[in-house]
Amino acid sequence: MSLETDFERVSLPLENAFTISRGTQETAENVVVRIEDDEGTVGVGAAAPSEHYGETAATVEAVLPDLLGVVEQVGDPHQLDRIERRLRETVERNPAARCAVSVALHDLVAKRTDLPLYRYWGLDPEEAVPTSYTIGIDSTERMAEKTETAVERGYDVLKVKVGTDRDEEIISTVREHAPGATIRVDANEAWSPREAVRKIDRLAEYDLEFVEQPVSADDPEGLNFVRDRAVLPIAADESCVTLPDIPRIADKADIANLKLMKCGGLREAKRMIHTARAHGLEVMLGCMIETNAAIAAAAHLAPMLDYADLDGALLLESDVYEGVPMPEGDIDLAGLDRPGTGARGG
View (tube, rainbow, N blue to C red):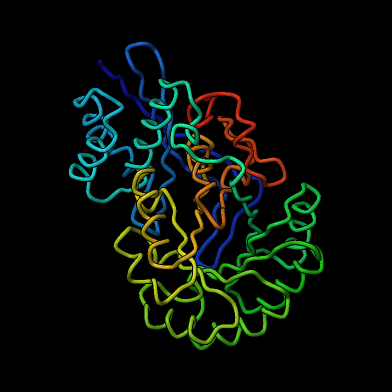
């Protein structure tokens, strides 16, 4: 068997400027990968690199020729374990670039077996958890408007970005405009440990589900301090990047937030899910702002999760790819009418 590969950068404008505690994003730069077998079947994946983790679209483009060279050399897309092992040996870092290749391979293999990816893995679509919808930091008035729009679109699980000097005002406003919603809060490392405990105590009055990454990832003892004293469960995101991080955070958080773009691929994400469970952690799968060429694959892991934050494509003004249906935030794997990840378009 022979495989042909290529990739291209796509620039995706967001519906609204997206602000978290460390910056604002108006456009997402993704790199789409295609892997085609000798029967004309094409697998699609994408990288959504984050500068916070040392990657850009340019670094992804720089390493993809070497990574795709591995795929072409092995030749058999069903050799997923061998290929992903060699990808790590070829490029140790750049997990988003490796992830794009992993997703495209899984899409191709599932298409070759004529199965949606979740069925290829043997997962139950009825166990898929809904995705949250993220409200980025903005003026209080704009956050109220964004919340109203999200509620009108049927999203009843909201993740609200905080890390400002008006966090309580933000959460009070969101709760006012979404009285029946499940609300999660994400500080993106913005608080000191003592500040986090104080703020969580205050914000808990607004009936929150949990708080994500309250303190710096460089302060594991601070995370432990917060988890021991906070009145809400704590999720680790920036503190939980790769599989070795799971045991390090197991006694410092309640929830491990994994991302394909952090860990480097679908097989590694599944290993992290099982490892987190073995350490007594609940599991959330998050995302960057991504085209459906990437998000679609992540959605197939939804039956293995406690929480999902897979709204990356929902935040785009438009997407060149369709993915797994997510009506009102429900990840509808059973409604997928095609094999592979479900990504199509381009």
